[in-house]
Amino acid sequence: ELKVEQNPLFLSMQEGKNYTIYCNYSTTSDRLYWYRQDPGKSLESLFVLLSNGAVKQEGRLMASLDTKARLSTLHITAAVHDLSATYFCAVDNSNYQLIWGAGTKLIIKP
Amino acid sequence: NAGVTQTPKFQVLKTGQSMTLQCAQDMNHNSMYWYRQDPGMGLRLIYYSASEGTTDKGEVPDGYNVSRLKKQNFLLGLESAAPSQTSVYFCASTQWTSGINTGELFFGEGSRLTVL
Image (cartoon, rainbow over all chains, first blue to last red; front, top):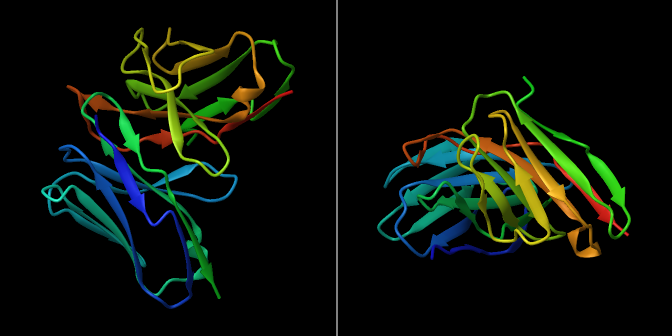
């Protein structure tokens, strides 16, 4: 059974700092997704990682996928307050479903 | 661009009442999903439909039923609402090809349900 673990689950950081959110999963998969959710809002797709070694960047966020290690990272560079949100990773279980991590609540203080 | 549209956005029910949450997508996606999200928690899959006319149980199907009679619509029913079903419900859709997801899930805005 595929399980997905994110850590940390909660992160409070200062603006301007760098940090990384980790997403580990338990069985083989080549497809991993990162989403953002603002309070009271729906989920917005950030990155789709479809192969080993995939790296995608958008502004201050960069996501990567290592399928051999079953690990994806979401790196935040020089954080700004607008990046405060909850970030979820999800992994394709090859059965028409995504298995979701519990989410990382990120608070960025000015 | 409408994308995924959920109705209603808010609903208050009394215990034992029934209701249907509606989801419509205009992206011609073959797969649709219903999730629930409880405060401070992640998503839990209730039911999904890999293609028109098919449905399958997810992680938490008890107390719910679904219908996918048309490709663009996925309905979630609560036959006898319970306070434990108070939650935010999200519908999502995607396009699968030969069992492989070719893209990300697209979500509706959510339906906030309170059962008293």
